[in-house]
Length: 309
Image (cartoon, rainbow, N blue to C red; front, side):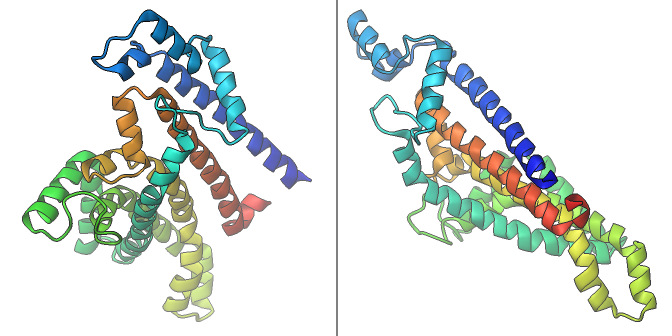
């Protein structure tokens, strides 16, 4: 009963966040200065009657709250809206999601494997040059803006060394995805390694480790089974949350490497004042973040019995 109430409360909280954030995004997008219909026309002159007809067609003549409620009503039917070219936003996203998902999952796997490994090595070699080198590298990586790392990696590894394609996804996976995935993963990887390091160090000094040592258990079993299981909790929680970020945070990298994903579509929609596309993509990303948050809570409860209690 308590678990059901807690779950219902959590879902209710996420619903409030969803409606609040989507409303703010909708207001910000459709309250921007300028007329999207005139921007769509470009240099072509439009009569006032034509503009009025198009505004009525896309419901831009309605009050903003009424527009939002109409949009939310469509969402419950699986309709993310129609852009100014009369194409379904859901269809536009469907053709782009495979690229973004491939890029995000590639970066996520890199974060898991490299980040956890670096954290364990750094903790077990605490105070040595290896530990200090890993800490310095991760801190330096976190301090550099992602677009700087992306452009630098593209110039060095694609243009000069020619190890990877400069841009595009024509070479397929993994050739076209490894370099941008490494750039995105570098930032999450730095956080994972530091989380893992501090968690392993804390657990190595815990009472249960001393008890296991007194019972004669070997270091490999103590570290590989007991310490790792407890140390993974903060890292797994962060990684689960970071997957949502990776799916929604590829706008800059997809732009730099010209990958035809959802992030690139969002970037182009912002440039061309395609409000319905911007709102539709933003809504899908919000849903991903909220669902990821719900999954994180479930994973945390599975890994840590104290949370279930």
